[in-house]
Length: 126
Image (tube, rainbow, N blue to C red; front, side, top):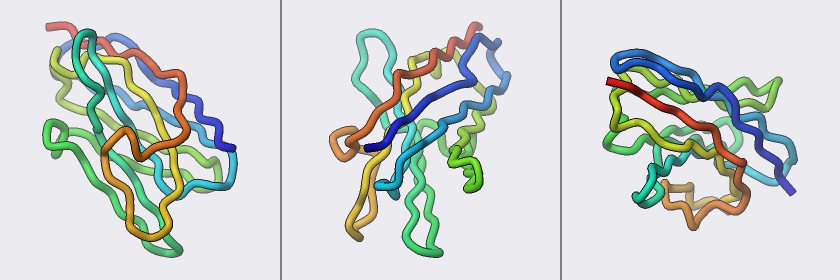
């Protein structure tokens, strides 16, 4: 079982920055991802980190490349999502998710992820 708790959401003006954090507990995961969902829209994969031994890889959705950055604090089992140059189009509920991959890596499709947090709201005003 894996438990995830998101934090760091809030309101910010366009052009601003926010850092989201995802605290992960449990030991059966090697993929952690951020998704977002705006009202009336489908859930969108934002970024993910995949760990296999000493290998760590990152992937980002096209809409956030160059603006969002993932990082992890291993000793705190926390994954951070640094978001910069925010625009109103980034307004959404942001969810952290985790899963275990047997070696094929993990993508940004929501159906690949088993465990989900409750979400944290990000609102960007123009």
